[in-house]
Length: 227
Image: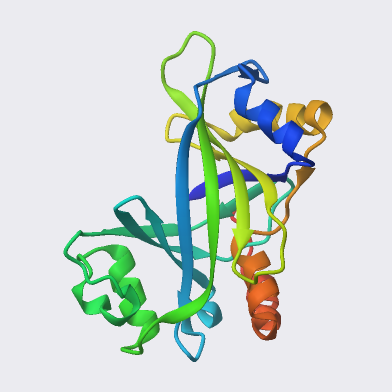
């Protein structure tokens, strides 16, 4: 289960300040690690994943490639809660991942992709590039991070959209929802960020594949965030 809060950061100046600030709502923030992320969202020609209520993402960071399936769910206030399964492709996995699902390592994610795609090849819906600044948030007096704060410079593949500034705060295994609540409050009150009710997948789909957005809306109506 993925639990995170999503925000739009108003401008580059605020973004840069959040990359450097030492604390957030009493949480220590570690030094930012920068990752260059290339995301490709995949589906069959028939939209098998979309119709089943999932987004399928192939993420490349350096030499690492990870396929993630995330369920659709409407946000509950600031929080997004979604079922998530993933598989890391090995260096030997052929580069055109959508054509070689049968060669992916055995995993829950691989099984689900095979079931939903029913042997059909996967094609590209859209892609996006991110410069991601990752910071770990830790309670005072503890050495175990409770959340991962990611500040993202995002550009979609539609070619017309300006770069956006975004922040995600995702719970780690040692964290609780109660750890996110003061962070959410301070981000809104002090930093003037805006709650982002939609995922990058939803926004990318609307920009690059607008003909599919009605199917997504129907699936989100059917699938609710868990309490």
